[in-house]
Picture 1: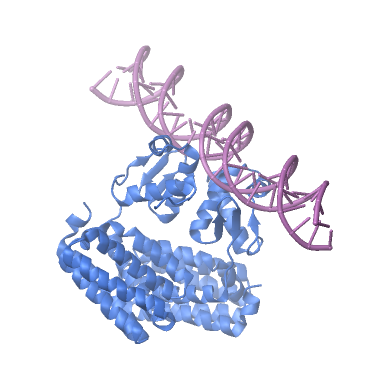
Picture 2: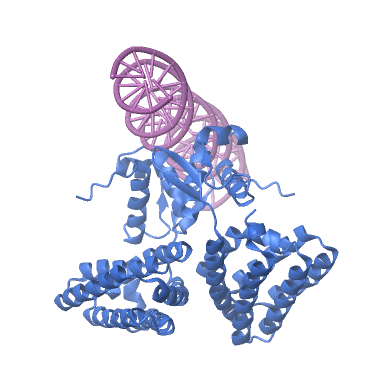
Length: 219
Length: 219
DNA sequence: ACTTGCATAATTGTATACAATTATACCGTA
DNA sequence: TACGGTATAATTGTATACAATTATGCAAGT
């Protein structure tokens, strides 16, 4: 299980990205092709390809003939991303209200049910995983591959802070309540309400981060 | 002039992207590393790196061990992108109203002045170039590298249809009028108006495409 | 005519070799 | 000590070599 048969190149890409987002590679750190290759047991070629892709994602800056450096993520970056996401998740929820299928609604309700359980138990890892899935279903339900693409990117990009915020039980519970209300609007195919609730959901996340304290969010 | 000293790899990337956006490489066409490399006078290595990057941008699909294929862009894709952009350019204009500098305002006014001239003359190539620059200034003025990044991507992505729509004099003139009103709002630092006008500007572009006829936009 | 199987060719995936560029260390000199 | 300069090493950029996978052509059998 989970033995994805991806290419080496693809695995290297995901591994390096994970190491950046998890903080293993510190900000401004120089990523040397040789050492990363040795670390992952591959040659420089797949590493180079991965670094070029990560540059496009904005996680890495490449200075020609010099090296690749981890791009840091600031408080402002995160605020901006959540503000951007609030608009786009709103749009996404609106479209989803018009296109969502019964199967997707069922999975959303199951997701909320499970999330209730795991947040009450304090299983933050499962909560994060369910949150990932919740939003992914919405992205799929929007019926727009463009919107899905950009939202997946952003959602992934802020994974680090989401892991921290959702580890606090109170926020996990509130977040799931907000999810619940969004699903109710989707079930009623009320596009306007869905948009407003999704927008609010994201803005509440920012407010929560303000209360939590940014110094703890950015390690 | 224009003798940019970029790396080979980077030039290959931009060349292939240009060839996709300009329609030289047709949709669903298979892009073979060897032939592209020969065409551009480089080995497979830089071509591979470019194709991996283009996959991340969504312009190419890579099927492992099979090949890279040009991803087509549909009417719905373009509609979605303009709808997404209308929200984000609105947000961008709002932020720009708060951060824009006098130099940027000056360049915007010069841009409109020049655009008046070229659209009256029917110089559509210069009009497109000025439109590019107009939006780029706004992206910079937003003060958000995240917003700038995503909007530049989208703006570039729809370059093909923009070339067609702005080649029609009436739309070029109207578009520039809308730009003028946005700049007036920015000069007054009226964030709300700037947001509304930028949003409308994008929605008008969609309406214009509807009038123009999609069959002509997608070759 | 239409499969099936297999040999061959073409293509991608990865590793390595070599060239070009940049960083580092060591030296002599003031 | 501080400053250049030069040789050396380290690193990136590109090309090529080889392995693995997939596509193609052709002959045999039904």
